[in-house]
Image 1 (cartoon, one colour):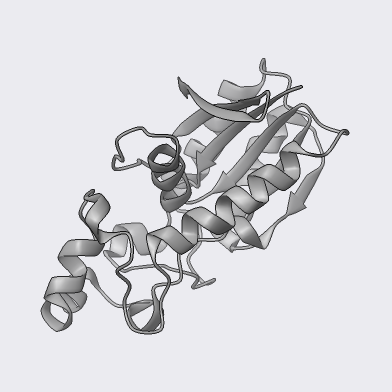
Image 2 (tube, helix red, strand yellow):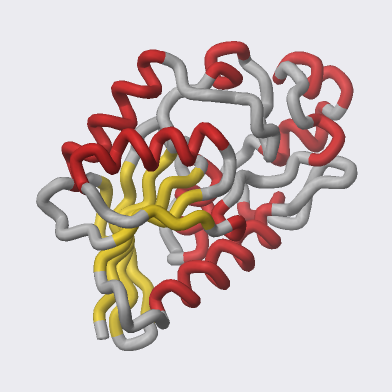
Length: 194
């Protein structure tokens, strides 16, 4: 059986423009540009046959899902496995302050190098741990008979780590980006960017 997923990054948020790391902070909301990006996601997905939107529980992802859903009119469900990376003690800090306090970890966490897969900020989560929980969620949803075409409102880390898991080079993911992946005959593959 074939299952299609359209994974999208939330629209621009207040922390994005302030230069602060969001992590699992839940007080970062969409900016006006972010709201427009979310609506555009809905327009881009309107002809794809999406049957459900699954969203991270964080406000910025839920807002994006709701705005995209104005074009789709499908059920929305929250799944905490699609939440942003836990950045531990640096959550909410400005990037410049993090770089000054944790320069080596900062450089590794912001590199696209696979050697940094087991690096985390104190009390935080590694990229490997993120990939494991993301694919636990994706495999669970792919195993449900009810839906064949799903959208996921999430975060940049989900898209970059999905690419890495599927043998693709990691990349910086812009707000509002949409990645199409497919599971067919128990194999995942990247279809491409929308």
